[in-house]
Image 1 (spheres, one colour):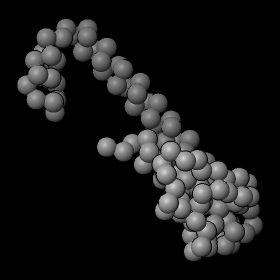
Image 2 (image 1 turned 30 degrees about the vertical axis):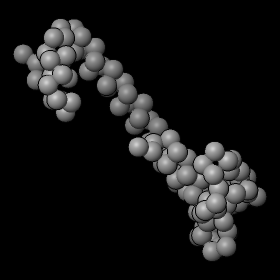
Image 3 (image 1 turned 135 degrees about the horizontal axis):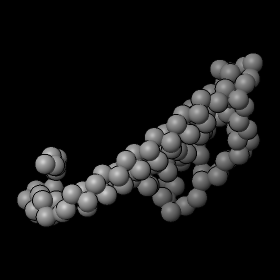
Image 4 (image 1 turned 135 degrees about the vertical axis):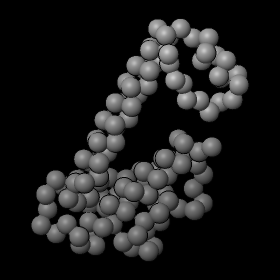
Length: 121
């Protein structure tokens, strides 16, 4: 007996109930592979983001007027490009200076911009 949790309504339910145990096992294994891939992606990001220091080397289409805060310029069309150069340090004696905060803020502004473009509803 298989217990299937679903959120797609009766059509999804009928589809899943007509699947064989083998099909359900295959779907479950694929979900596990996706979960492992997503976990590895999250761990890679966490490892990179936990670097001691990010120093901005130059950029285009970012607003630095509230230094050390950074944002994407409000008039940038989502189809336009963003550019930045960044030094990344695994260890650095002045981790929390303004230059380091600025570089980290630049990276996060870029990441949030890309995330919004890729995962917008």
